[in-house]
Length: 604
Ligand SMILES: Cc1cc2nc3c(=O)[nH]c(=O)nc-3n(C[C@H](O)[C@H](O)[C@H](O)COP(=O)(O)OP(=O)(O)OC[C@H]3O[C@@H](n4cnc5c(N)ncnc54)[C@H](O)[C@@H]3O)c2cc1C
Image 1 (cartoon, rainbow, N blue to C red):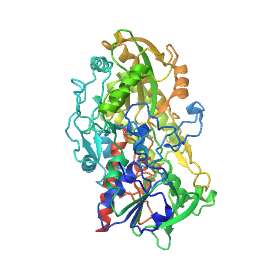
Image 2: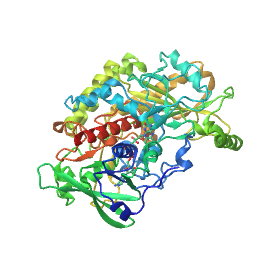
Image 3: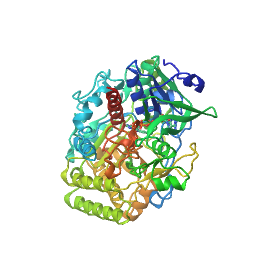
Image 4: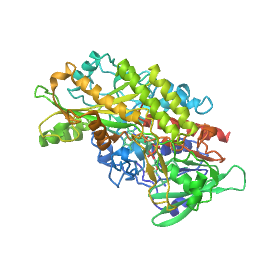
């Protein structure tokens, strides 16, 4: 049960606010509820979507998500078709509900490696605020590691070290393990890959059993709505307005540093303005935060002038630096000797109804389960010396090409320099393979499949998201540039090869009867075309309002304040300074927890 937010703008406007948090998503609800813990602050949150509690499309962990790509929950945004994407428009789901993307995501709970967070600090003039040690207290503060009632998979445990136990987001190990996991792990071990029993300690390489944001007591998703909002919903100093879309941040520009005074928003077809006396926090996410900044006169001055917007702060970094994990899928059919369960069994009506009954009664079983065998490796973990050196050459050529077009900002050049060092020093994973116990496409009822969803962790390609109209309700234009860099494509080709090596290794190979995807025997040229036509994204877009020094082209400073303003912060995944080899939500929560402390500290 959870107290419903306000739906009437007039009721919301009847209060006064010290802080306004725009966007009640992953980061927004974290910041807002932490600020509201101080009863001397009045905190307002404005969220475009609605509360979806209870709603089994959100709460049931089962890996096939019913909320993504549905307008009731998703902003339904997509990229501009490009040659590099096989002329496809790529759907980029983002949660439009209380909880934001944490309410529709795949629930994986992972952290990146120590050197990746060190990079964040270095891109911020070594401010000392964003390395592993600075973030760890906030990783711990947001997490509540639960013990699983089920025994789990023997030998595939995940340590309790460096976990948090008292935070709002419940995390646990998986509910069920497919019989295809043990031979997969054994095959990887044959190939020299070790099980990583402590992937949350800043060293993420190896095959591991990923935690998921699932509360095992209720068998349901734990997100920023259930974890942060609901327990705080009755606080008299926290007011959340749902179904209201913010269209602009309003500034007092009489001082050299702009002061954000309030926001304009639309609710029920009418326009309103609400003020904040202290600060405004933008938490509208990686695709909407740059849009709101630009609509408010903060961004590339030329772009703004062309649209008739008066540029208040010339910040060319707004909307740039968009990065994403691009994935391809290898899918294999399993032989009749495989006697275990895969998610394909949900195609069998009897199995599905038994699982539904189990879930309804015990909150366990396969509907409480998802995929959890995650593999992260640096180059030397999956390529031989010749392959690695060839990939390094491709990296250099891709960077040269990017620089020759003049489109690489100082920030991107700095990032790529660091990325290159990671390719050779073996400390940072370059790929992720998520083992899926089941087939994704072209499945035959009654058959079992295993898929390997395999992705590039540190792409060279960089995209952007900008407005092309002053209509705040129109979608922003996303030019993803996915797979424009040959390096990204070559790495995916290498992953197809590695996946085939894994399934050719015993004991896994005995269970594999056929390669379904990609179609076997394609030439490299055909495979490249196939990659462009079929790749999917990891839903890990970040970096479009980057925290980096202003000389590099950053948008926010190490206190997450927008350069040129005294009291406008961005707190969401758009501030990530560079991409991480990880799923993003645990880091988003950590940033938001830290941001709340930064805001509170500014008062003293
Ligand atoms: C489908 C999917 C699967 C994913 N899987 C995983 C996973 O398994 N593990 C993992 O770690 N990460 C995963 N991620 C990534 C992770 O969930 C996101 O990076 C993270 O939740 C982003 O948080 P945020 O606070 O930046 O934005 P969001 O959580 O998206 O919040 C933004 C909020 O702002 C609201 N909003 C936007 N514009 C306006 C406006 N103008 N006015 C008012 N409100 C507005 C939105 O409705 C939304 O509620 C996934 C993401 C998606 C979309």
